[in-house]
Length: 233
Ligand code: 0O2
Image 1 (spheres, rainbow, N blue to C red):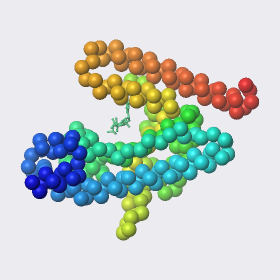
Image 2: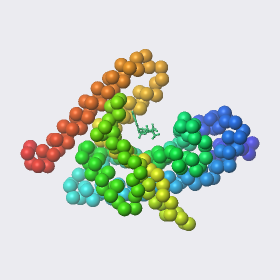
Image 3: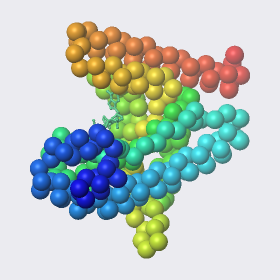
Image 4: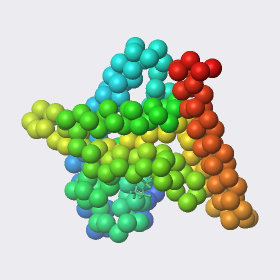
């Protein structure tokens, strides 16, 4: 009873369901980690705030100089416990707070939706130039799109958070996309949820075509904006 109450307090229904299918040993290990796990999630939330502040500062500075915002919107999330457990199991890592921190790079995720492709590189360059950050990885799926047509710029960054008794570096995944890339990725994500697709190959071909059309529109929009700024049109 004690165990159930503790789990219910901390996890949602989906996680409790998962938890019920775990071996006793794993449940015990998991429960033993609950407080450290909650602390870790809190630290990820703090890291997200730090990066969001940096992005908002860059956005405000840019908008004053250029009379437009490079950032359309920012969406942030800390990965759900069920998704963390699922990913750890899928990758074959033992479930521990230390392993979550060491092995998963996207527990804290920030998605920055930009108006134009050049804004993405401007913001990413300005952010990564800041000397309190450590850039661990850059995956440029804009210059090198995934075979299915997925486009975004992914950065894995380490940022310090200042706690009462320590300074701690936290990993955050920052994804930069244009509105058009986000539109495609959102619909792609939704459509993948349906498992019993009749013709997945055909759907993949169609989605790839849409990704390429969208990319061409992004490029054209950028050209139009540049012409406006240069006074050509
Ligand atoms: P969610 O729910 O968005 O968090 P890794 O995360 O390193 O283990 P991988 O594939 O090497 O796995 O990382 P990658 O390529 O940087 O992609 C990670 C995230 O990018 C995904 O997170 C998605 O958010 C997004 N992404 C990558 N490829 C696609 C794609 O084809 N379509 C869509 N819609 N999104 C994509 P998660 O954890 O899968 O999901």
